[in-house]
Length: 143
Image (tube, rainbow, N blue to C red; front, top):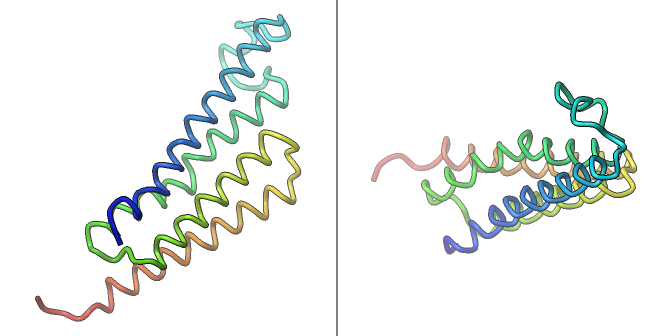
């Protein structure tokens, strides 16, 4: 696989993070601008934000949980040359699951749908790590 094909899902995952920063910021500024939230109320925590703002903040924070394992795996697979078509397809499925998870979180926030997207990503990422570990641990020894 080409470096571009391997890294493209990473770029989309990073783009998702920046989109969520934008959504979170826009929602926060709207609440402060409308006077529904005062700076003093949020200075020490998130509890004063309305649910829509907290949902965006939580969706953003979630990108630094399970996706960290994805962001650690990709350079390892790239460096060891273990990223093939299966790896790239699974990477795209993982990133798509993260996009769906974030979209559900910042819109309807339907927990069963959000959980399904989350679990799909976890299962795919687990498969990616298992395949990678298998290929590393059971690779032929020698040059």
